[in-house]
Image (cartoon, rainbow, N blue to C red):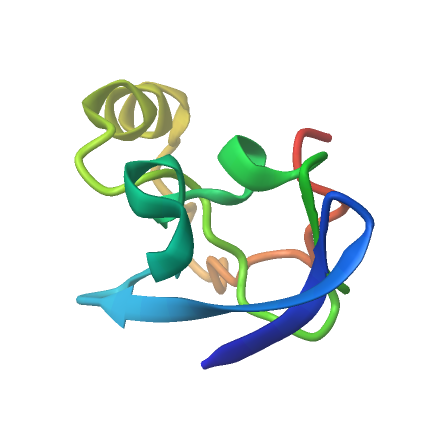
Length: 92
């Protein structure tokens, strides 16, 4: 998916890719600084309309993010849908 946003205040385009069930930002022009990164890693330098694009919860291979998600997750009660809520701005 192509992302239309801003980089350092200037109009800019990069990609969001999906690997498995996870989405990641990829900016091939930026090298490792923006390759398979999550929203929080890019927000502030990059800007995009968060309502128009999928949430990228963490960077690829970021084991600390996966561990934190697993520790904070609680099993759903019987009858709960388990649906995600709408996210706010990255870092909220």
